[in-house]
Image (tube, rainbow, N blue to C red; front, side):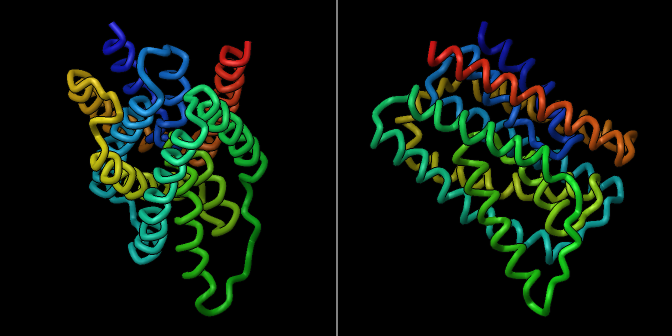
Length: 260
């Protein structure tokens, strides 16, 4: 039965995540936490897989629709995100080994997620930074590193934080920021999945669930890319703020359930 719930959650989350640049994980992770049908490590893997497949589908569809990307900038962001993805996965495994409590680690993830989302809501306007020669290249790699680490550490794909930072630091227009955000998510989740496969047996993943997740992620990613074409920048930003606000409330509910 939980496979059906996962299927529905991922389609809706990835469709919304592809439109808003949030990646879906920010919805998938807390929703799966609320269902409490799988161990934390398995939920993190399912979320990463769903977001990775969505990012592949969405990026392909956006480029095929004619969305112009500055590939050198995306490469620098993604390079940092790959390293950050490996670092974030190492941090979450270290926390699980050190604290020996899934509930405690989950509370840490929830707390950091809420703080990150609140900051993401506050910083959605360009700061108009004037970059000197070579400074922007360093900032791109450093931003990718930070975002990739947060994406895998929090288990949410990192999208809301990506969009806010790209708009604030690099003064990107909202719709453009969502596409670059999905690109960062693609590479950070690829790094996380690659590391996770090295200790796959310890994740307690149900193999029968994986095809369900991949199919739902493909449908959600394609649907999101299609919807994105029909929305302007203001509509995208309005949707972004609505979803972030809703996910903050969902994470607060999950924290309440764990504590009380």
